[in-house]
Image 1 (cartoon, rainbow, N blue to C red):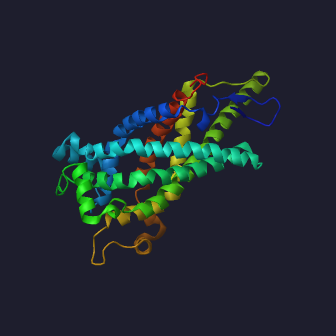
Image 2: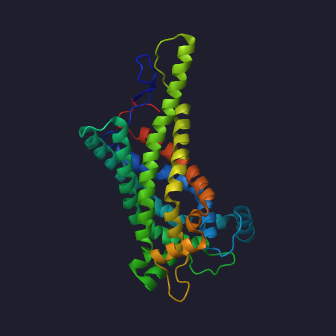
Image 3: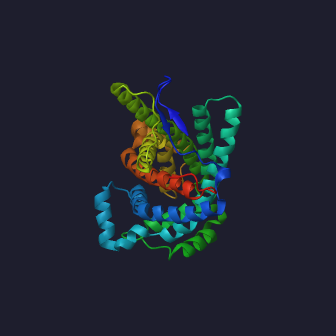
Length: 337
């Protein structure tokens, strides 16, 4: 893929590795390597998930550092990996559904939008938005029950009563108490949160990726102009490609966090307040009214900083792993990283 840095005939072109679509992938290698790579990434980031979840359910505001020290003292390192086994089991099918839906939708929608006359940049943005929505909806079929079980395991221990003896025991007790519906508690609000979040993220990532490379191209164009040289193609090395992918992912995470934070706040409150109060779990409308009473729009953005940081770290790691995985899984190994 080549990105022109300017409309000028002497503009520098950035020669990036060719885009890899669904038809170019060795599917078995893609899913097998994907499960292994993303399981490793999930393991590295899991302690942050535990901290975030516990902060959401405790009644008083405690800093992440104090909470981490408390977990380490009372439960040891194992406290940071409560529910990890359950989460890991769900990672393989959920990631497979996510990646499959993402790549199939991106490839198909991208072809349709180009045929409809959209420019490459607009077609890419539309395809990424549609792919993000379909991937999120497909993955939630597996992620919601896994979240219900793993989050209940995360918050027990320390000062909380231990109700479940592992993931299997939690699964059985939830089924016995609430039926299958108990495993899909919060499914609707999860779709309402993650579908637009993924659409915004993948669109912002696509646009940010092009913008960063465009800026780099303009820099080289100016450099060549100062040196009196003509338009010369620029082929970045693998380190530069990974750095731009990471920067684009961080930018997309920040934008997505700001846009979707109110939905995430509502989702978290519905989950945290479940079973509390005389009227049971509050509705979405009641939750919104409570937030408006407490502080208006600003109340919807509580915890934006930690969410922005965690999303950026997670997304940067995931996208670089994901792009690396795609190049490892091509049927034709002529496409280099």
